[in-house]
Amino acid sequence: MLDKMFKIKERGSSVATEVRGGLVTFLTMAYIIVLNPLILGFTPDINGKFLAGGDAPNLAMIAAATALVAGILTILMGTATNFPLALATGLGINSFVARIAADYMTWAEVMGLVVLEGLIITVLVLTGFRVAVFKAVPAQLKIAISVGIGLFIALIGLVDAGFVRRTAAGPVPVELGSGGTLDGWPVLVFVTGVLVMTILYARKVKGAILIGVLGATAIAVALEESLKIGPSFISADEFNPKGWGLNVPSIPDSFVATPDFGLLGQFDLLGGFATAGIITAALFVFTLLITDFFDTMGTMTAISAEAGLSDKDGNVPNADRILLVDSLAAMAGGAGGISSNTSYIESASGVGEGAKTGLASVVTGIAFLFATFLSPLVNLVPYEAATPALIVVGFLMMTQIKGIDWSDITIALPAFLIIILMPFTYSIATGIGAGFVTYVALKAFTGKASKVHPMMWISATAFLIYFATAPIKELFGV
Image (cartoon, rainbow, N blue to C red; front, side):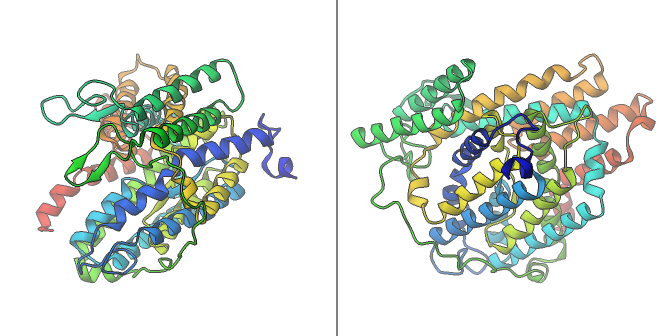
């Protein structure tokens, strides 16, 4: 039944492989259940109220809603599209949402604008516009998007594990570990995880990534139980560079917690326009729209290429359904009160494990639903044990770079900008935007404007407006 539903054998996979891939994806992105409440939960809105409507942060309620919405949407993605892609609250988007809430409007009004953005992007999918833009992107730029995302997720892994960190001062923005050295047991866990995964992968051991994550977690728990390392973030004024990045992998007193879903449905669709003003609210929706629109395009392209599902032009099977589910996810995130949900590039870790079908997404979604009750168990896996998977998958995605024609400057330079700006700006949309604008400009000024698809002109123009958001705000005094 599963094989018929998900075409598992037809895609060269197996049920066991899909289950492993789904679990790896969950373990790699489960941090969002902990991190989203930290980003959204401590920011008061314009009335001084915290998300969940109280006078004090309610992190447990945000965590429960985060896991629930992610679980439902990821299962929908798997069953409706047969594609190995998981969804959850978008990182970066939630930080942007938190900043808007604090300065301009109430939390309910912010989430209402997130729902509105989801409605708009859903209409763009149903009218065929979003799919048309995706198909208009040249195949080699799609390859560049995959390669850029590979570098991006590798950098995410290095930073989250503490292997690479910001410098305290000076002209160099980042450095190795703490003060230029790898210091602390958590970093050792990360390095061990990377070595184990790469060795197992090189030896073609099935489940190499999952084995690496679970093994590193076991080592982390043993170290914490014996050495009491503690977290890296102690307070606003105290930081322990030798501590764990997010979760402290100690054995919890209880493995079960009763979730509170009271946050669901707390949104005001149009109230933000009255509270913050039409221009401010419109720019907020536009920024979310551009980010969601192109982030997912990049993620979908990269996952499909890595899974070997794309055709010769880089097109993705069931792209219209994938983009529709992703658009609905933006609405669902706002309606759930936990910010826009979007496709996660960490899904590549499951694909690296061999996942090629929507069954992997179903497994990931079920794990998220269980996490609403088993949040103490989710907290057991630290960054340092999960992020080695991103290094391995980043390498696999990087291998596609050979498909770019580096002798054609009108393709090579835009591809180069896409690849380097994704990790350097920590933004998929920024990399895509810079590449699109440069591609259109180069074609136009080298006498090849007629070869540029009209959708690329539209996309490049939208990105120019996106990049000029700050000057536009200043012009209108908002």
